[in-house]
Amino acid sequence: QTCALPILAGGKCVTFETGDYYYDNTTVMNLDHVRLFGQGDVRFIKIVDGGNGLVIGGKLARQYGNGITGITFSSLTAATSGYLVRIINCGQTNLASIATSNFPAAPYLGVSIENVVQITNSFSSYSGCLATGFTSIDCVDHYLNSSRADANGLHGFSIDTCSGFYPS
Image (spheres, rainbow, N blue to C red):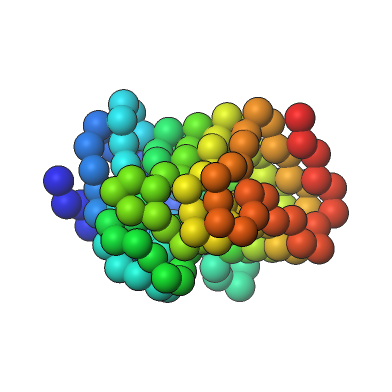
C-alpha cells in the first residue's frame, strides 16, 4: 500500500497497521509530541535516492517529545546517497524497536540524530546500510539500550562531538 506521510500537528500519535508504506524526502513531524507507532510488521520504504528521507524536527526552536516505535526503514532501490531518517534539533525523543534493513534494497545512510538532547534509543537494529547505520552528531544525553548496528558498509554507530553517551 502507498501512503503519503502527512505533516502532523503537535500532540498526535499515529498508528500504522501491518504493511509497506512508501515515502520520499518529506517532513512528517515538525511540532512537539508527535509519535509514530508501528503495529505488526510495518515497513517504511524510501522510494527516491539521496536527500534527507523522513525528517523529524529541523526547526530553529527545539521540538520535544517526538518518537518512533516499531517501524523498519529501508530503500526501494540501491541507494548511492542520502538518509532514511534524520532527527534534528529535538529533545526528549524516544526511538524504540526500530530497524534499518537492506530489503528490498540497501539504503546508503540509516538514521541520523543531530543536535538532539535527551534521546532514548532502545531495542533497535541498524544494519544493511551501504555507509553508516546510525549517526549521532552534537547530541547531549543519548541513552542507548540493547541496540545494535552491524553489517553496514562503513560504520555501525558513528558518534561525533556528543556529550553524555550512555550505552548499556
